[in-house]
Image (cartoon, rainbow, N blue to C red):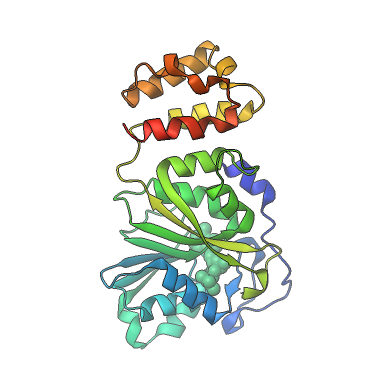
Length: 287
Ligand SMILES: C[S@@+](CC[C@H](N)C(=O)[O-])C[C@H]1O[C@@H](n2cnc3c(N)ncnc32)[C@H](O)[C@@H]1O
């Protein structure tokens, strides 16, 4: 998955908590990134930022013991569909919501969100296990029909990579690819003490709004070009595009965007590769 390597290397999301118990007395499982939101005010801020509508079907990934789930249901949305990997959590959810007036609008699917078919949803609101951040983001962005937006808690550094702009130190392949497919904005900074057990890192809530329509480009070919550019950060785009295979790739992409003369107009070709997006996205987004 695009950007996955960078993220895996940096996620230390496991945190302390050895022997810790979660709500309902469930033993904490580090490998599943089980850091439960314990600050109700923070849960309320996430709900407020999400801009939920009464007609919304909300996808929640990793509901855990249901703190966010409960507030989502209380906000009056049409339905919440929650995908949870851990059967112990699924049991805890059914115990918590059994006979509850809100439960008729809740559906819990037990499974791995990366492996299952996603249900229909208008908006995704989730505090996810950080180790799946990159593949999950791209899975959501390739989901059809296109949803309105996702409001997701990520590890802070991953969030900063998502929103990084050309020239920022954190600007990387992940930033380029996610920003090709969506508009991303940073919503909230969240300290580690808002979770139980606390992870080793701070977090951020980010809004991701898929672009409509999506750019008329093959994502695989685009990602191939971006990968080449970021692997050779110190080369200029001009020198890279002298290589036959790179030029062919660029020509294919520009044809998809109906920009047959782009290579001749590469005024930006002398720029360093990691600045590529600054120059080419505004041109391509008008096609
Ligand atoms: C960070 S906790 C969030 C719990 C809850 N949403 C909250 O905010 O308190 C992440 C949750 O995702 C679940 N999980 C881990 N990997 C998953 C996967 N691949 N698919 C679905 N759920 C997963 C964990 O079991 C855990 O309940």
